[in-house]
Length: 115
Image (tube, rainbow, N blue to C red):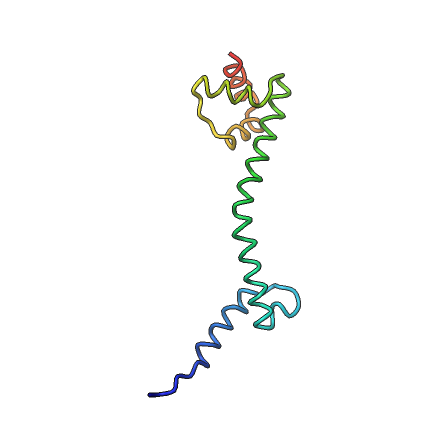
């Protein structure tokens, strides 16, 4: 049986890893083992933070809606409860945009949720 030589395949694999590690600090972008370790760690962080980003945006939207509600003299949970009872299904992202870009429209929603 012929001997299998891995030089080309191994070189391609290492080049691929080093290309992905481009921009890392110091030897982490030049040495294969350092680059591989750092990349695995970076992938773990990016996987985790894709979920964290969603949490952070939801927190931001709720904070914006809450601030607008407090200005109108109503709490956030009463406002959301009023919208549910009025069968208005707008997500928090849209409501937060309304507070910034269309305050009059948000005030109409506020009146509907109070009533």
